[in-house]
Amino acid sequence: MTRLAAGLTVVTVLCWAWIVPMARDMYGAMTGPSAWMMTMTWDATHVLLLWAMWAVMMAGMMLPSAWPLLRLYALAAERSPDRGTATLRAVAVGAGYLLVWMLFSVCATLLQRALSRTLLLTPMMEIATPRAAATLLLLAGVYQFTPLKAACLRLCRSPVSIVAHRWRAGAAGALRMGLEHGLYCLGCCWALMLLLFVGGVMNLAVIAVITAVVLIERLAPFGAQSSRATGALLVALGAWAWAFTR
Image (cartoon, rainbow, N blue to C red):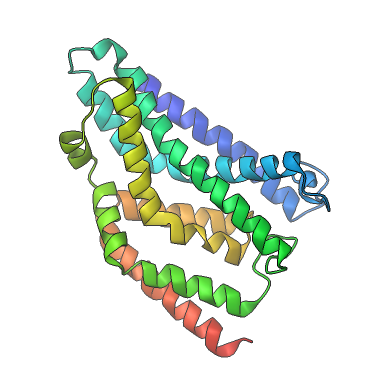
């Protein structure tokens, strides 16, 4: 259990250790970690770097919220007949969870390139028009009230239910459990992640706020209520932006 917690902490810290300098350079001289973004030729290497940026950012933002499931799985695995591989199987759960977000990062990369090509995204990776930003705010806000959001959040907040009802033996089974949990988490958070385009994909304040919102929704006792409060705030901001901007 200690090794698992240490591993999760190290991975999270390493992700943020890459994100923070890149984000600071992005809004600074752009001669350091983010210099590769200033290119007019988006070849395979630059697209891969863009995907890596998204993937590391998603890992840093989302991995901490998976700790309750990883901890509970490890505790249950240590009581199973093949408890000698408990840590390895818990790592497989985490790998499955991260794989979902790595695939999401592929979609985010493609979306970013599409928005950039149509000039809907500025070189600073922000939505170029207030109306488009308002639309994303409204989309994210309305989604917070949907049955799909509620169902995914309920499962994300109940790792006990996942371990009790979706347990699968072996490392392959653990990987599949991680994938399933990751899909529920994606169902909770995909619309919130679109807000990165509103405030700036590498805007540290926006990244920190979205991370905090996700952690509160997933881990706080009042998480379900906070989800609706966030939705109401986003709808209000979106409506205001739509009404008073062109």
